[in-house]
Amino acid sequence: MPIDWKKLEDVGTDLLDVIKPYLPVLAREGPEFFDGFIKKFINKDWPTIDAEMYERMSLEERRVLEAAVLNDAYKAAKMRYNNIQLTKEIMMKVVIRLVLSVI
Image 1: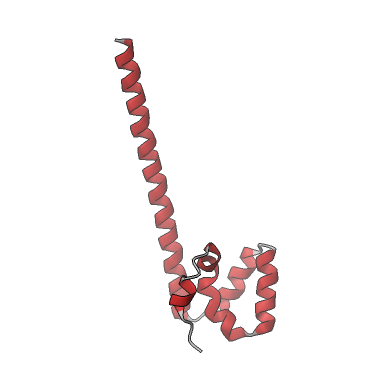
Image 2: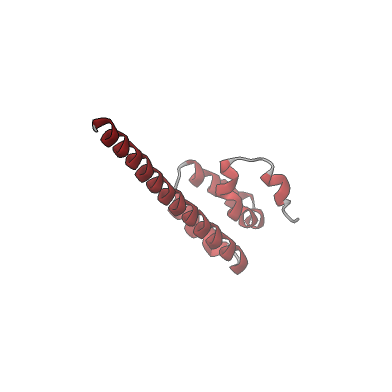
């Protein structure tokens, strides 16, 4: 049974973003594997979850996961850079205002 990604995306939770790459594996592996996943998820045992899921993923699923990780890393780096630039701009304005108030 194919997964309807549009319906799942309509849920709009952060949780879905975390488990979305793993859904095909969870659907294939069955209820016992899913129960183990839930237990590890509740305990936040991410290294074990990642290792078990990755070994059961197809090559295409791995590529999608890797692309998502790279995309998230790029977004985080870009946000950090933008925050640093904004901080520099604000500090420059504060310094200029202080200098002008002294003059």
